[in-house]
Structure formats: C-alpha cells, structure tokens
Length: 378
Image 1 (cartoon, helix red, strand yellow):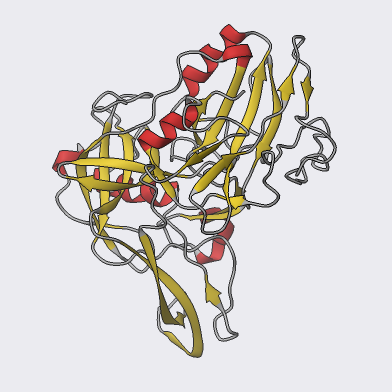
Image 2 (cartoon, rainbow, N blue to C red):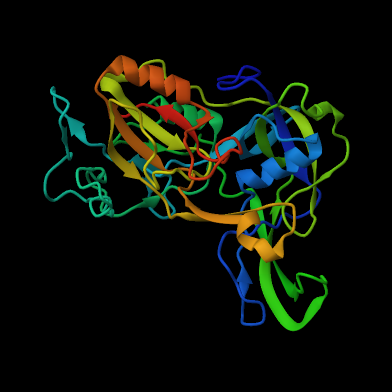
C-alpha cells in the first residue's frame, strides 16, 4: 500500500468537507409544479474541479477523484464502489466472483462451463461487439445480485491483485470493512425561480434530495497544481461554493493512505480495468484501447446522466455553458487481453490511477472523469 507516495502525477491530496448538506443534480430535466423531482447525486468530478479552480484562482493541471474517504486520526482512507463482478445473495455473508472466460494456449477465448451454466445475461452481443463473452455465476449459485456498498483501498488492492477472491470462487466479507453508504439522503421541498430576476415563481414547487456525509467522512481528491499559476492549497483559508444553492465546503490538505497499488505482473497479457470515477469516453461505453489489446468481456452498471455547468450564467446561450453526457459508472470492470504480455504490464502500470483518455468532452479527463485502476484476471 502507498502512503505519501502515490501513483500517477505528482501533487497533493485534499479533502472537501461540506459545512452542511450537498446538492448536486444529475443530468435529467424536471418540471417544477408538475410533480417534478430533482435527482441529487454525489458530486461529479467537474463539481470538485470547479470548486478547486475558484479556490486556487486558476485551473489545476489535473484532478483525480472525488472519492469518499474516512478519517482515522490524521489519515484518510479512500473507499471505492465494490467491483461489479462481485456478487452475493440477499442477506448473505458470502461473496462470489463471476467466472471469467477461458483462454487456450493460442489465446483464443471460450466461455467457461457448459450450456446449463447460470449466465449473466447482458446486451454486449447486441452492442456492436458480438465477439464479447459473458461472465457466468459460480457452480451451485442460481441467482445473485452485485455486491453493494464501498470497500477500502486495501480491499480493492487485494481484488486487483487477484488475491481477494478468485474468479468462480467464494469468500467471506466479514473482514472486508465494507460500508453500506456513508451518505444520507434528506428530502427537501423547493420552489422554482425566475432565471432573470431570481424571484420565486408562484405555485411552482418541486422535491429534491440533499446529501449529508456521516461524521469523519469527506470527499478526497488528488490535485496536480500548475506551478506559479495559482495559489497553493495551504493558502486557501476561506470556504468555497460546492454544488448547488451556494453550499459551502472547506478545502484542507490531507494525508491519504490506502491508495491501491497495481500488480507487478500480468500473466498471459490479461489486464482488468476497474473504473474508479465516472467515465465519459469518445468511444461511448467502450474504453479507448491501445494497439495490441482487445476487449474480452465487461460488467457495466447503469449509465449515469452527467451534467456540467459554467459558473458564468448565460441563459440565452444555455448550450454554451452547460453540457450533458452519459457516463460509465464507477465499479464497472473490463477484461482486456494483450498479444504481448510485456506490453500489458507497461500499459497497465502507465494507466493505473490516471484518467484514461481521450474523453468524450474536452478537458473532462483533467477534471477527474475516467480514472481507472488496473488489475489481473484469470
């Protein structure tokens, strides 16, 4: 495990500690006065990027995050969504890992097991990638749901190294330190405002949710500054606007431990790609891959509607200041295979802990979208 030395670009870790609740909308429209509901989500990477740029007086070189982190004394441990190929039965302690495809000596890929296997049915074959192989449930397991909640960096590192639970095998989560959810949703009632006068529109009510972090939890992000271009984090003393409704948060330098390390070797050129932050790639749900690598399989969660906005209000040119895109959710995994195992290790080590680009939108990678971690599969 790494402590002060982290993979990726040089920089510092900071935490954003909200004074109260956080309100960040997703990309879906709603209509006030017609039973409208404003769906709130955890802060997007762009939410954090905007807050830090305002605090520092300029955009940093790049960001990684945000991740929810738990404080233990003076240190912070980041937590990550459970990988989506880990499944469990309701109220069960045991956790299974979906069985991976088999490869023969020539590198050809085959689905594991026989015709009666409990397959994980996906739309991969109908998505323009008919050669992709579905994963299957372990023997004896007829039905299971993806493991929910968050796991600490140490647990995720064991998963990436293939030592937490092998494909098709079972393990107990008693010692995983998994948390269900450190964020509580609070329902609120709001009123619509006139965009020009900022006055209340009569009778136009809507419902929204605010998010409140539990005690000793904060949002952590790795910041790579631009030397000489803006203030240092140590010079930031005032709280910054964070999310909607002018909510405030403190920015504090942090010592983050438990950032997962990648494996040293990648046998047979097999690389597992774990999505750590929402990913919006120019290739859609498929990650941009280097030459010599192919996508074998994937387990992907429901797409996230991501909305971003400029701090400059320009209601007459709405499309110029706000954008919306669909993103691959954190916890999704991709199974890759390289023709040359040496190329696999080189690429995996170079990408671990960084934003995988090019992104769907300019500068989304430097804002923290599409950060991936690399591991092994077998």
